[in-house]
Image (cartoon, rainbow, N blue to C red; front, side, top):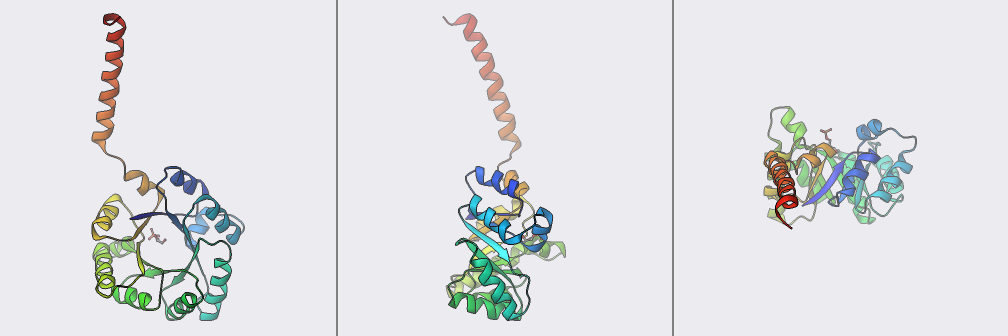
Length: 222
Ligand code: G3P
């Protein structure tokens, strides 16, 4: 399973990348607003220079021509840029055109398996089901992801399932069991994946015993 970080914050991206387990980055207009910075294209280029992996950059046009124009410009920033396209009628049309032009895409704002089905038929490289936002309205985000993985597997679609809007480590654990291709997560979730109180307690005891052993050695052992 690939790990992407879901942020546009350069420091967070550097921190996650330093762990050596980062495969890519996803951004969106809200994450860009949070990160700040003057120039969108320059910012995306800087992310591409930090991480050796796919970087999703989202179009903000909602008409076919606008999506195509923005997407072509974004794809020209760096070979790793994946054009993020909203799951709307003109977005679906654009997915097919981008595919024909060799431009990779991440179809975003997916909330149903039928949406995921049509995005795959249009040739999306990635589909992004928003798990957390489905949970937020008391539906089942995990079930959505599971349904999409099943549908894609039934027909051998090559579109990769990119679980998004991940809020906690259990989302990641269940996604791994379901077999998603990618999980994109905030830095806080990535950090929490490796935390366990028994690890911390166990290490504390090992280090205390080691200190005792060394101290005894100084008096008992030659
Ligand atoms: O990248 C899109 C998605 O991950 C958004 O997550 O937390 O805003 O629902 P969230």
